[in-house]
Figure 1: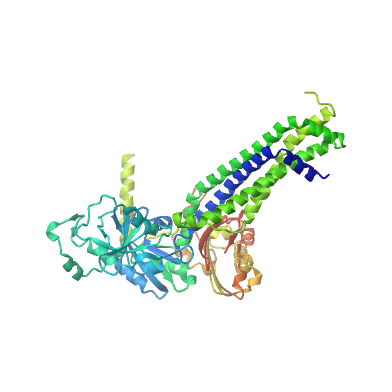
Figure 2: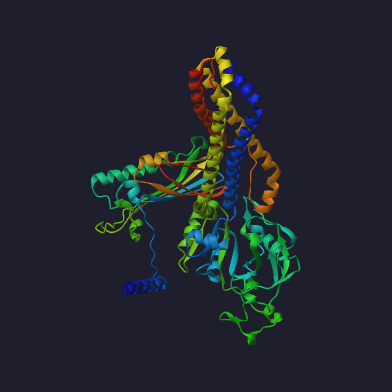
Length: 418
Length: 195
């Protein structure tokens, strides 16, 4: 009878404990693998928060800072870009398209972005997904607004709802309540900062500020809506601009052109590169997660060893019978190592199954709810390595009870003195 | 202390107004051991730009005057002349260099560009070598390659680069391909970057 078969039958005899041990290992492996999947998904969706944009142009700043305020709407720009520079850049022959963004106002805590309707066709995320409207259309009128999915959910807005834009970005900013906007469209959930933004036209940003002087509304300057509409609302500045180039080969040269722009200190960043740089800052947390799940696997393996050690006492008779049938102490040791390895391997495979079944069932929901792009792929080389590593660790862990069994079976021989 | 702080802020203000004045002043960062590598691939066209401090490539940044220094410059120019080997591009991709431009600031015949720069003294070892004749020099290399089978290009392997230039410690890479933009640090310990 081969060692493997013997180990299997012996385990079958103690199937209750064996099952619990396998289950414990399976859970820990599922946790480790699940964390790994979520980690990769988080990194992938983070790195593709914005795609299809070759460069982001803003005033002179570090690349991470420019990325933070232009894409993530965290923090503020130190300076704006003048309309003249924006126009000059837009006219460059390398530029295929350019979408301006004007930031600085808010609506009940959500950032207001002044932009052009091109934003809705040019902004892409997750490689090449475009923004889509779940209801309504892009802004057309001066006082139209397009809101992200989070804004619509949190504030209960639907197409046609009125909203008031506040001056500044504090949630209780003094309202531009004389210029109410109307929701013209609601965007589908993307899992990007777009979900948390209110989009209006560049002219609208100008319009809400026409009767403001030095940060306070001057009642005497309360200009009627009709007159505002008739005014020249060409913006004087924009905060940043998304730029698409005709050829990405030109990207580095064009970036240099912007960075060395004579008339105004500007910065151009490659958003994808800045995103990977930013991830290396926030990515420390993901490593901590991995470390914790590795510790859980380690704990499960210790559990396995202690179960096997505990079982040795009650299995002395089994060992003795094996010895009587000609098994040498080394065989007994081998049996225990095989047992431990089998248990771990079974646990690891069950854990893999848990994760994949879970992924199949939950991915659409997670994608939709959290915008986390989880991929259901065949296990990666790294995951195979984890599986092999855990199975290997299981065999190694078997050495401890095996050594003990080797010693007792030598000492016990055929007689069991209890 | 207070005086120091005040004068520091006055200095900052002065510098700030200086920056806004007619003649613009600007200084590029220059950190020994750290270079920049920009790679863009579109269709069959591969563009590679590399900028490093002269010290990373040559071991010195002054104008090459002695025969030894000149030989080092010649050697570097030759090594930099073969980007396919230097950046570990897959031979199967069939990339041919169609354009290349190598500027070595420390080269007497070719120092028009980098000696005009006023470089920021940002040595890793913390001391400024002021007696250095005037400033840091850089090495710039720019290649355009045409590849017959660009799909075979799977990444960069700078093992040969770091072997040839042991003073180089890190290249800050930016990669633009069909799969989007990516960035990464290439070091002798991890000399590869996947496309």
